[in-house]
Length: 166
Image (cartoon, rainbow, N blue to C red; front, side, top):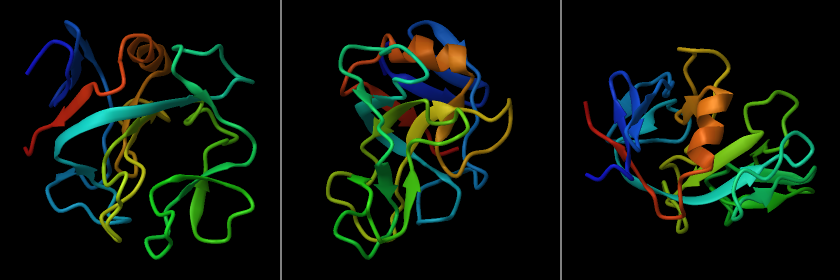
């Protein structure tokens, strides 16, 4: 492990000499991730993208891409676009990236089950803003806004996210 890795620990994510409190999936950590289980997948994942709401914040990093009103994420394991960024109109099951709450104002995308998604293995393991401290996610890793912005300014594409199997 390197100081440039994000490492999940029982007390938060360790990165660049700091420990950042976070929330994980309501299902805990798993080595057998399934769509809808609410668990955070164990393993070594990589940051592969960054999305942000330009109507709510300045670009957090030069490689961040804006989230538009039609942007969605497919969570339909039977669709060819499963676990990919898609645009409305889009009929299969999906979640909106442009939410009314602030959870996805800034999203770091991981390579969990991407780019060649296996049906049912789970979609959209993001690093995003939490609802409140300790409130679990659907499998993502969530932070307070200030810490997420701090991370976004420092991570690079390919930064490793290490989730140990506890």
